[in-house]
Image 1 (tube, rainbow, N blue to C red):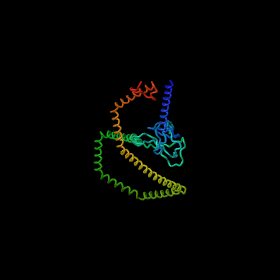
Image 2: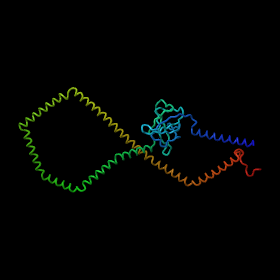
Image 3: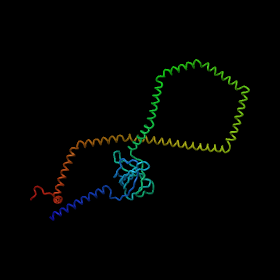
Image 4: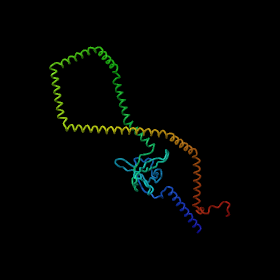
Length: 351
């Protein structure tokens, strides 16, 4: 009886030691034994990020995501991502946290890019979110903007053009022969009556010249010119006074300043357009450069799945045999726990 009790105690101590060793091993492996401090950041989209996602600083792992909490602010939903990072790790104040992937088929992680500030963030501070560095996200955003432009601008314009073309075709479908006949008639009449019209116009011009240059008309013209000169002098005296001239000068100066600023703005807009064109070209180059790698990765994944599908029966049989052996082993241990210490006698042992 005493021997059985000692065996039970030994088996219990052995199980406790094994469990403690496993707990310690997984704690060291996950890094949870390192002292941590909490920081947070905010994103509009946290696709692929979950609790346990790695957090890296310039490629070096310093912690992991502990919680994600959606919050509504100003009519928008943003996600607060809390991170447990190594204690006393220096994170510059102007650092940014970006959702990125380590490779084309790699998992998502949060990359903290260090800034140039001399001061560091205190524990519990907010790390500024950065723009996504995921190639597929960038390409998806560009495609979404192109789709929005097509749906909001090009398609309505094309619809209006098609409608105008249909209306014009409908309007001229039955009247086209009549319109052509009217044009021919008008052209023929103009060709026949053109010389007579020209002669009448020359005669009218000569009569107007004679009437304008007679004595009475000449005096009227002279008085009209005198009145125009007097009005001009009055305009100079009343409108173009010293104060008004100063205002006009200021207005012209403001107009020149506006013109110079508008020229600068036009130059900046042209530079921005050039940068956007360069960005679009770079995105196209990246997509074309990574196309072969994506196709190769998909082929490798398909080959792996095919291999697993071919050997799934053997794998299942091995797992089933292993499960039966484990069940038999646990059944024998429950029946006689002392087998863990003294083993089992062979069939040829002495009784």
